[in-house]
Image (cartoon, rainbow, N blue to C red; front, side, top):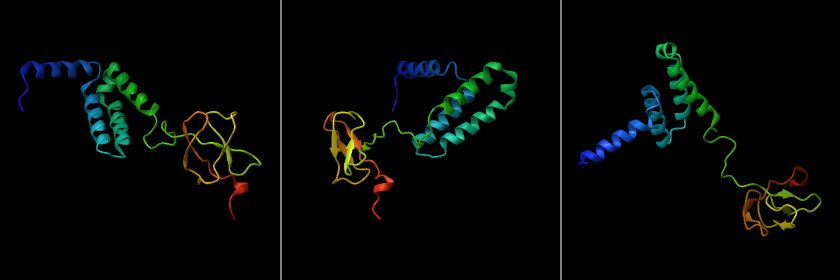
Amino acid sequence: MKLPITFAAALLIAGHALCADTPPEIAAAKTRYQTALNAGSKTARDQYLQDLQKLKGSTKAKKSKSFADAVDAEIKALTSEPKPGGKKDPNALPSGKWVPGRPGFVTSPYEPYKGLIDVHNYPPGAQVICPYSMKPFLVPELPKTEQPK
């Protein structure tokens, strides 16, 4: 497939403008990271962090403060974002709360003061709809005092 020369030049200029502030060594490491991440690699993030640590200890980082600062900024950005598969999932649904003394009833995580919700027929972890807010939530695990023996 042939691209018109103006389109290819525009892509080249746009790509250069996007990484004008990023040193080529960091850009190459980031490209390897994104490729491995898109391929489903579970160790991509750790490998990228190792690559950045190597760059931080390189002679170029020792000679150039701006390069060292760019590497530090990339490490900080990577370590401040949550790890894929970490404990907190922003898309995870909240759980209802068991009502003490009322087995089989929960309160909604969205509208806890509106009323009780009967979840007798749902197993823990099941997704149900809050009748007050019309949003989904999960049936919580049974409290230890009410676990079947």
